[in-house]
Length: 46
Image 1 (spheres, rainbow, N blue to C red):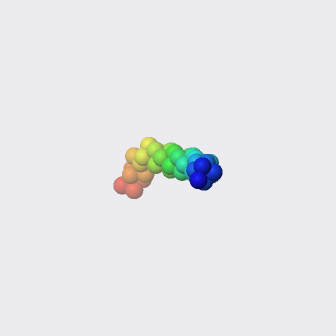
Image 2 (image 1 turned 90 degrees about the horizontal axis):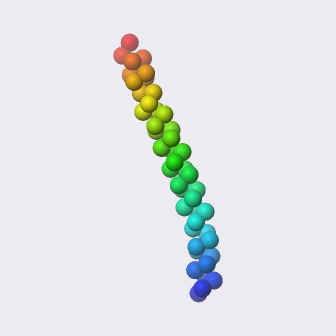
Image 3 (image 1 turned 180 degrees about the horizontal axis):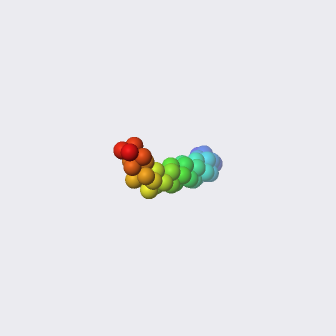
């Protein structure tokens, strides 16, 4: 049983880190889109 607990801990932390990196990258892209949105809307309106 202790071995099982150790393996789950070791296997979940990289997964959580990957998810965190993935979410961070998505947020960065989202910020870029939000920052450029005024330019996009100006292009669409004109």
